[in-house]
Each structure stands twice: as structure tokens, then as C-alpha cells.
Image 1 (spheres, rainbow, N blue to C red):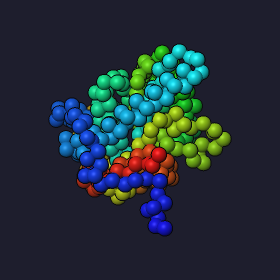
Image 2: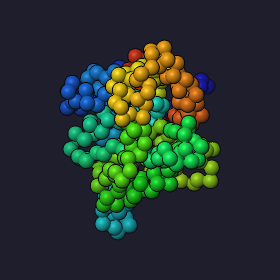
Image 3: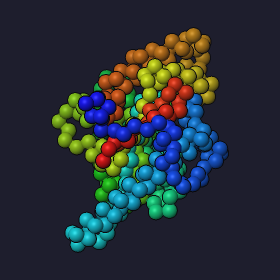
Image 4: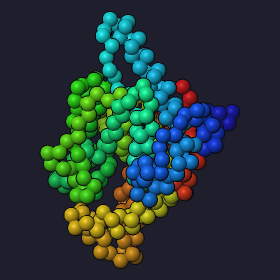
Length: 312
């Protein structure tokens, strides 16, 4: 028996996956894409049609089935029908394009008539403040599982899933590279919540003693995948773009990087990737890939080349 036949996934080429779009209409235009694209992430309308429209169709079917299941359970238990949000987790490395994937999904799902309210939350808001990271001696491990307030994140998702009227989360600033004191984002009973983050599928040894995990609340999960070399190149390219944009702001935590020469900047970017992001990817993020319900496999040009869908 071949290894492929033992895989829990069915694999599609981009073209094969695109045919599953059926008659799903495209309601996005180039103006929308400019707003949704991440830094240095190539995303065309053609890729939205080929990859993300079929995915939105699949998710719409899953959401509908989930709503019917909850209604059946409420009827059996003699409860009044409650509103239970459908939660989608999006995982992947720094610079792989998971934030763009999450934003595109939110935009497409928001247009389906049976679930008009779709919210997007990133787990960045649950990073410990820099002062706490420094106090614990883990500043260099920002983005690793231990740098997040996992208890607060779990409670946040649990409250959303239980149908709480309002649930608030801290706000993270990529400019100051820290939690914004006193600022909150509030979720008010959405139909769907997209949760995007590096380690949202993790259940590894770094969470010893923990019996409940974030992914236990997910109805569907997506992992954005690519070769480590390609992700490194994308990270370095993004670093150079940020030097001319966000890092150039005197208020930026990384403002000093904007004054480096190109050679110094490249060495710095490669060093950060190798010593922090690559370690996190290999140790914590990539090992969770096979837990995802769907894997988007990207090529060197940032386009999705294959889609792997877990068999039900």
C-alpha cells in the first residue's frame, strides 16, 4: 500500500480545486484586493476565483450543516435555539500569508446571505506585554507558545462559542510592537469568527498540564504551507519593504532598522529568521500542520499550487 493511500487528505491541484467553485459568484474587485493583500503577498483575482471561492463555498456548506446540527441538538434537549458561532482557525508561519488568507475568507464569507456577520481576530492581542516578556526572560521568544496568555485566549474563545453577548480582546500594535494599554476590540455574537495566529493548532509539550486547547473550539482549521526556504525569502523581502514604510516611522519599535545599509538589513533579517522564526516554525508551527482540516500549499511565487482537504 502506498504512503499516499494512507494519507488522511485528498489532494487537489489548483486547477482541480478551482472547478469545485461551481456557480459561486465573485463579489470582490481589484480595489478590495488592494485592501486585503498583505505586505509583499501576491494575490490576484484569478487566484481568489480558483482557490478562495471554492473554499468559501465549502465553508458555507459546513456552516449551514453546523447550524442545522445545533438546532437539532437544541430541539432534542428542549432548549430554545441558541446562536453558536462557527469558528475557523488559520495557522502558519510568519510571512507565509496567513493574514491575507484570513482577510480574504472573511470578505468572501461575509457576502453569503445565511451568515452575514463574520469577525476576524488575530491572536497577537493575547501576547504578553513586552514588560512581562522581559520580566520572564523570553523577549527573544515572542511568538512562541509561551509568549501568549493562553488562559485569557482560551476564555475569550470559550465565551464566544458559548454565545456571550459581548466578548473583548486586547489590541496589539505592530508599530510599537506591544499591547496597546486600555484598548480593546469587542465581538458581538457573530455568525462566524476567523481566528488567525502562528500557534492556533498547537497541543505540544510546551503546553504540558493543559487539557483544553484553542483548536478544541474550532469547527474548521486551515494551515497555510510553503517550503521553509521560500518563507525565509518572503520574510527578508517583507523586512526590506517595512524598512521603507512602517519602520521609517519614528514611533516604530524597529525604527533603527530603517537606517541600516542594505547589507546590514539583510544580515539582520536573515539572523532574525534563522534564530527566531525558523526555530518557531520547525519546533512549534509546522508540527501542527497535519492537524488542519485543509492545507493550502504555496509555491515560490506565493500562489497556492495544491489544496489538501482532510477526508471526513
